[in-house]
Image 1 (cartoon, rainbow, N blue to C red):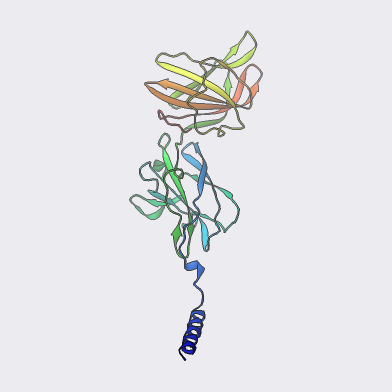
Image 2 (cartoon, rainbow, N blue to C red):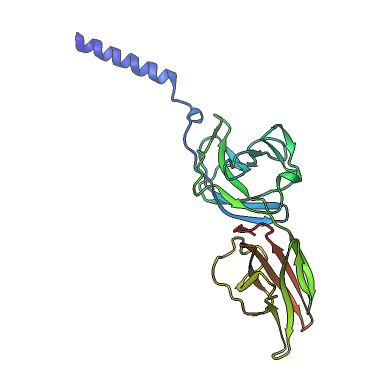
Length: 280
């Protein structure tokens, strides 16, 4: 009789469990895959963030972008053009995907002393001031973000002035903001164009030439590999410059678009206006 009673109780338990149904998977909070920033490209008063992510969690809805300073990279939250979050709306995926987003004036944001969604003013993204960025994955129901990690996931970039598609004549000097980048001179011995060291007092100049297809191929200046010798100007090459002055290192770069005989070149160039910043 006792055995029969136990069977009845067990059956009633199963009926009760089934009638309640299985839990809604969308209501379960779980750790979400964290996006990884692969590159941040500084530009003139803006930066372009490139990141990779793979998220297939239930109710996943997109990615949020934050930026700030080194102490608090999440001072500011970026909103979509519809003034909503996530910043980037996308669907679930089982494969790794790449996304880009530009942080510049007039994007929507909230943050320090900004409680309402507003347009980002130019004063919050200035040349020479480092910007730290973090990207999170986000789901709406229940509201959930990937865990915040600083190491390996927060990345820095520093906007700087730049000039594009400029014609530079032989004998002239490339000038941008506070610094001189290089002198373009004609070597009459072998009839070729060279970037030469200006040899100014209290300054040490060094250059190196690397392959590239644009000014943005290299965004973190190397600390080694420079020469103080003149370098031949070759079209389709990127020239990296390191200037030591006033006990600080300043970095610049020139991308040579084309060469017009022995008279001039067409180039893009930029110059980091702050000392010892490994971002340009």
